[in-house]
Image (cartoon, rainbow, N blue to C red; front, side, top):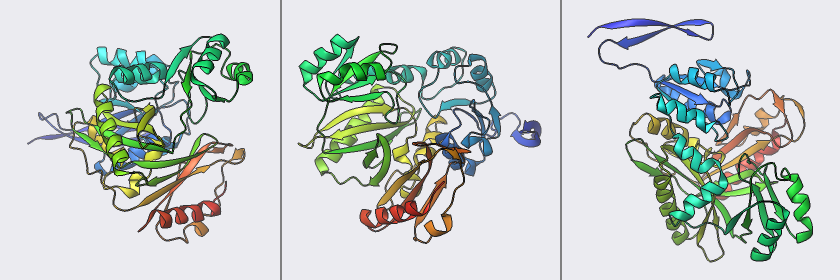
Length: 401
C-alpha cells in the first residue's frame, strides 16, 4: 500500500500528515464553532487519537487556542468564516448553542457534515420552541406560555400564581435571561430587566422541586445511544456550583430520568451529546427544565468519574464510531471555580489544593478573571459522595485568582 505526505500549515509551523493513497483513510479533521473550555476539553480527549482540530472563535486567546491545530478568529455570526471552517474539516460541531443556525443549514445544503444538525439546534435554540417540541412528544415539562408585554405576563401570573419565572426565549445561560417574579408588583421591573420586549419572552410556572438534577445522553450518527448516570446539581446565584454523582434520588426517579433522556435525544434527532436539566418533584416525578445540545458543565465529572467522558463520546458520536462505556467508576464530586473579582487571572494555591488525595484541578487558561466567570473546576472521586465533596471543597478553599 502506497503512502504519500501532505504538507499543512499548523500555526506558523509545518506539519507532515501521512495519508494512505487510494483508501481515503487519513487523520480526522474536526471543526469546532467555539473555543471555550468545552471545546478545549473536547480536543484534549480526542488528541489521544491524534485528530486535527480547527476552531472558530472571536477571541484570539480563548481557552482552546493553546491546543487547537488551527484557529479562525472570527465572529460566530460570520457566515463566510463558518464556511471556511467547514471546507477545511471532515465534520463540524459546536460547543454552545447560541450560534448562527442558518449558517449551519447552509453548510448542510452544501454537503458538509454538521452535528448536532441545524434542525436539532433550531428546535432547541429557542426555549419556547424547545418546550413546544417536548410537549408535542409528551415529554413532561413545567406549564408555560409565550408572552408579549406586561399585560400577558400579569395574565400568566393570575393563571399560575406567584412566583413565576420570566425567561428570554433565546440567548440565556448561567442565570442570564431569567427573572423570578414573586408578586405582580415585580412584573414591570422584570420585564424591563429582560429587554422590555426587545426579545421574545415566555413565562413558566414555578416548580417547588425537591432537587435539581441533570442527565447526559449521547447518540451516534448510526443511532446508538448511551446514557450517563443522573447527576445532582447545586446552583449559587443561578450558576452551577457543585455536581455529585450518583444523584441521591429514588430508583423510580432514576429510571424515569433515563427513559426521558433516551426519548428526548431521539425526538430531537440529536447526534452527539445532549444535556437534559431536570427537576425532581416532591412526589418523585421528573420534569424537563432545559436542554443543551452539547457537552455540559454538569458533565465535567465524567472525565475522572466515568469510563468514557462526555467529550470523548461526543467526538466518537459525530465520527460514527462505537460509543464508550458511560458507567460511573465510583462516587464523584465536581466543584466549579468561579471568579470573585475582576482583573488579570493569576492563579494561586495549587500546591495547597493538591494536598488532598484524589483531587484533579482543571484550569481553563482564561487571561481575565471576572465575577461570575467560570475559570476552572475541581473533581474528586472517592468511596462515598461525602468524601468526594469534602475533597473538592477543601481544594476549592485553597485556590484563588
